Figure 1 (spheres, rainbow, N blue to C red):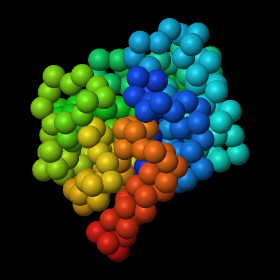
Figure 2 (tube, rainbow, N blue to C red; figure 1 turned 180 degrees about the vertical axis):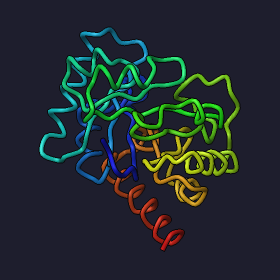
Figure 3 (cartoon, rainbow, N blue to C red; figure 1 turned 90 degrees about the vertical axis):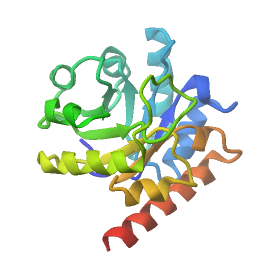
Figure 4 (tube, one colour; figure 1 turned 30 degrees about the horizontal axis):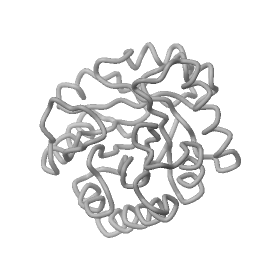
Length: 219
C-alpha cells in the first residue's frame, strides 16, 4: 500500500528524453519521488520484465516503490510493488487477488461514475484526469481541467475513499501547484522529468512545489 503521493513519476521508453530508464528511476527516487511506474505500451513481456527489474535495482535502498502499468503478469514476474490500471484494463479487484493484500493497486478515474463503480476496498490510490492535454498518451476524451479535478476529488471523498489522489496528464512545474490547490494530494508526471536536462533537479523542484502548495492550502 502507499500512504502518500507527492510526485509520481512515469517511466516510458517512448518518452525518455534520451535518458536510460533505470537512470531516470534512480534520479527520481533519490530526489524525492513518492512512486514510480514503468509504462511500455508496445513492449513485449520479457523486455518489460527486464526493464522493471532494472528500475527496481536502480532504486534499491531508497524505499520508493516501482509499479507496472497494466501488466499484472509483468509485475509478478519482476517483483514489482504493484500495478496501475485503467478503465479498460484488468479489473482492480482481480489485480488485487493476483498480487496480494500488500501490493499497490492504482486506478485511473475520469468521471464520477468511475468512482462510484470502483472497488474502494482494493484500490490503493486514484490517478485523476487527464487534467490537461498531453502528448505522451493517446486520449480520445477532452481534459477535465482543474474544475473537473476538484469535482472528482470531492466525489472520491464523498464516497469515503481516504487514499491518495494524484492528478495526471500535462502536469509540470508551471501548473503542479494549481493541481494541488484543486484538491489533489500530488501529481503524476512524465515529460516534466524525462525532458529535463537534469531529471533529478526537476523532481526535486516538483516535490518542493507540491509540498509548498499542500502546506499553504491545508495548513
